[in-house]
Length: 419
Image 1 (cartoon, rainbow, N blue to C red):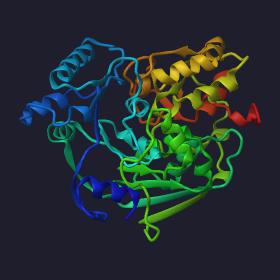
Image 2 (image 1 turned 45 degrees about the vertical axis):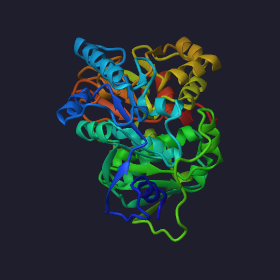
Image 3 (image 1 turned 135 degrees about the horizontal axis):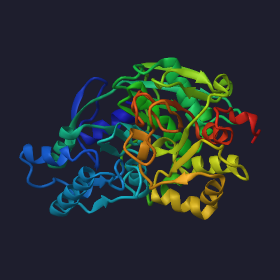
């Protein structure tokens, strides 16, 4: 079996499972974000009177944090009351950050964990050897009521990166390249496993980006085999052992395999309208930008802020261009403060907002107007994603975003430095 199959087998009390099989598995962690008050309503509609495992349930206020409207504020109020009534202690209120990062930092994610959230980018957690996946309100209500949920065991697609990255190339460029080549429907309800010498050389923060955006190919979950880097990263948050077996049997056969020469991949961009509309950054040189957004669960970690600070140190954001930065969590924001990255970026002209999702989903803290062009390190760029349906969104790496902030036009980071 593959590691993902082992997780589902052990969570469902079965000796083995195979792709396509339906199982009912015990969920280790169920997370509700503040988009989903419907979870609470559905819980009661389904006859729920008590949460089966309050210690396994978490609520994170990240999409509308702090509340930008009366409705959002009232949703927060009702969720706080529900948590208090049901004995749910793990309520992460405004400003704590994006749900995936918050769960990691608070010790809810270990290799072998089965983590379900009301957010499609829960695939992020596969970078830590967990099975992370997103569901809607009714399924999450069932998890709260029963502690378990049905799953179809996914096929596993294998993506292998080999070769050393060129200067200016980040994990975001790798995954944009893959999505551009394979397209948005390549991995529907599949698990995407990433491996190869390139992946081994990446930091855990960069691996999280690969797994995060696997959902943009339709993936149900993602996976990277844990190594010493994984354990060193998790040790900071008190995780020292796997929840379940995360090894893959030597004779396991993938449903398909795709290999990429990472050394040949250049800084890339997803052009407005679709995340698989791939282009090279150098071919978009000179495109005027109104706003740049560095942040979210895809581009708001310490490594991303460090990269931006190194590029912008001693320089200024171009006049007429806005640079909005939102760290993925309060923990990351404090680390960036301690390292001096926030000071550097503010001095360059950047504006910081509360850790969370912000304008990524067009909610607040930096949405764009009709006719405006936004360069973003977030994950999606369909019309209306970050505000007006007439706005244009380019998805790029933090390095490309920071380099472009200096000129106010799309800029290849390699043109600034060989670092």
